[in-house]
Length: 128
Image (cartoon, rainbow, N blue to C red; front, side, top):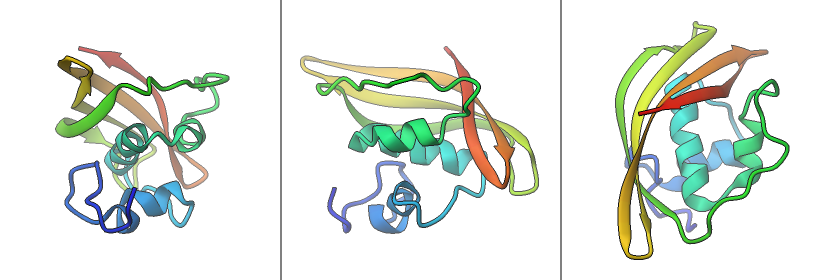
């Protein structure tokens, strides 16, 4: 992804100044929502290493394979609870829009996050 392209997370910033810096290890998400947005961006740009690194070790899969035909195109944050800079847990409910050849779809998830050692991690989520 070009450094001047808008970040897929939807905040309107250039990728390199937004989620790209988190993917590159030049910073950490300060909130659960920021981590969730950066993970959506990782799905959009195919950054499997970041997805695995930001997944809590207790629920992280051994490997992750993304569908190369699925394009994540838009993110809506529907609700958030906790997950602030001074919290240790949080949740974010979101709707992610995607495209596959010949179809469009959405995924709605209520994701849970924990903060350990100053870093936020994705734990798990319920679809729907």
